[in-house]
Image (cartoon, rainbow, N blue to C red; front, side):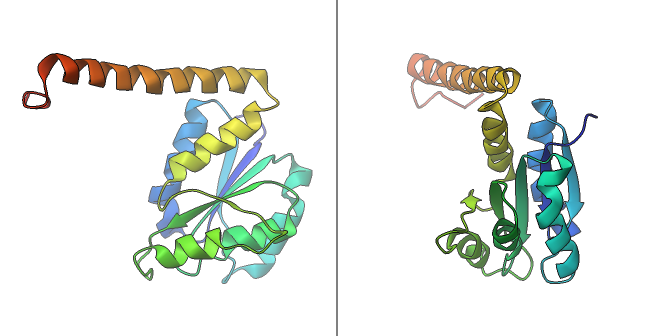
Length: 172
């Protein structure tokens, strides 16, 4: 794989089933990425070094997933000049995921974190690809194709529903 331009980080390996969605999308778009664990609470020095140096290693976007108190995305955003996309993860110590959502969403002025929905790491991967695509025509073209595929998929469904009526739709 080429040198990573997106970094996917998470507070714990228990976040991997969710964060894998971002990795899978970036792989589909052929965007080189790295994936690792950086805990804001258990490895603060590693988090500090990661956030301060990611841009010097060629990273362009950081996707940070965390559950519970979910400080990782905001702390990384406070130290890095790069855009950070936060993924709130519903974890075993979470209060229905709301603690994670609010911890990532409610950042103070000056420290923005783009926040996707709870467990929506695929959306974080899509947003990262769009950011990269804003200055990379090849990635932009892949995103246009992806958007068209989404539209085509919905068109198949609404045409089928309109032809069959709601009572017969999905009975197969």
